[in-house]
Length: 288
Image 1: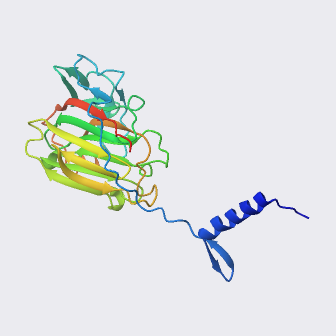
Image 2: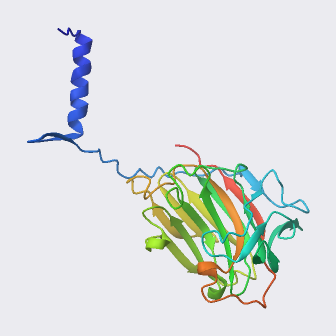
Image 3: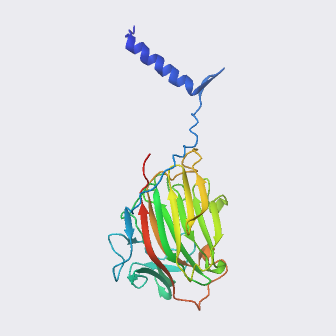
């Protein structure tokens, strides 16, 4: 025989109420019905006025190891790219207040080009905030520069499950058309559901322009030269649509060719080509 105290009866009652709130009675017994989470409320988050992390590229020589690491190799990177990424000043160097990432036509590691893919992984890994990058892009058919973000921990699984944020992408055969895109399991380019925005910006290869993302629990918003061009709001339906609740790091690279960058071929007469970066700044989100 079981005996219950008054506290025991209360605990049972609470449990029954909790179970009944997420169950539906049928002739075969109760069926679990998951609660509806719904989208978050936009609290109007703002960002600190001074950068929490920045690189103004005031040194000379190699990029600062305290700020940057590299992805290296020539595997095609899932996009059939043609370059071999190095970690040397041959392809990434700092001088006169600028970072220069240079793609060159030269053989290395079985590939016909070299370039650099710089990352802040384990140097700057952030959850929410504002990223600003002022850059001048390469020119010519076959260039594919990108300023983008990937998850540091791949908490929800391999790409695209853990997400991707493309702050700026440009393909040289479509000059001055700049793209801001997010990818997740529910919304990504291989099933043609990606969330994306494209804007024409005259002179992306002849002048510096500002590329920015404002990332909060409510939305990812993209800006070119401080003009909003993109917004993707958190639907509140879970990680398949919104894996953007884990820390991400920043990437800067110039790819050569590939499924998108090389869709109209590669002009072998244009190399070397470079992306110049004036600064990279990260501002923390102010919690509310």
